[in-house]
Image (cartoon, rainbow, N blue to C red):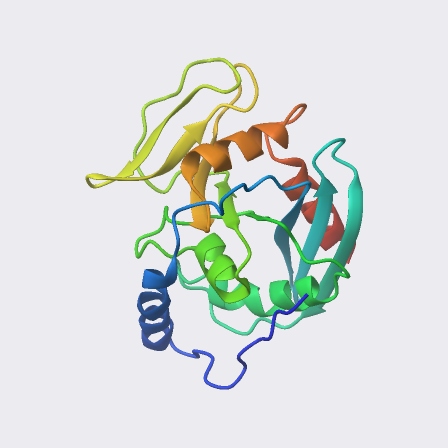
Length: 219
């Protein structure tokens, strides 16, 4: 898997990071590849500790939700805590974890946002553009306004910021709080929604996120 990390010139200030987001934003492709039918999905998650963070990448077989490959990477924070710029803290280690995988991911499922972001370039967009892998974000909290979806699994309503639809509030379990799906790169909302439902037959959060979270916490 090729995930060369551009260490030279990587932003170190808020202004530089915002400029980089705005530079990369036009590269986001809001369409899934023709014939897109992944057999696996790779979840990305980061766990913060007092000494730094651990990033995890877990690849799940979509037919039975089995973990088929996983990798993690631990290191120091490389960017300060600034809302809207989490990718600059998390991506260096996430890409390092991805680089440890033996097989190229077919789709990235990020624990965070994609287009549902103030500059329409959240973690899922950033990860997708840098790797070229189709990507989507699944957030626990809404970054936008929404009407509550119906009470049944699979019900959804648009997630809106201003006059723009940036994602969906998706019910993955009957009568349980929805998750918030947004596209990252080489992805559309219908495809992203279907994939999240495939990954949530038993729990609110996708199995990709659950397994990546477990791995990141185990170090």
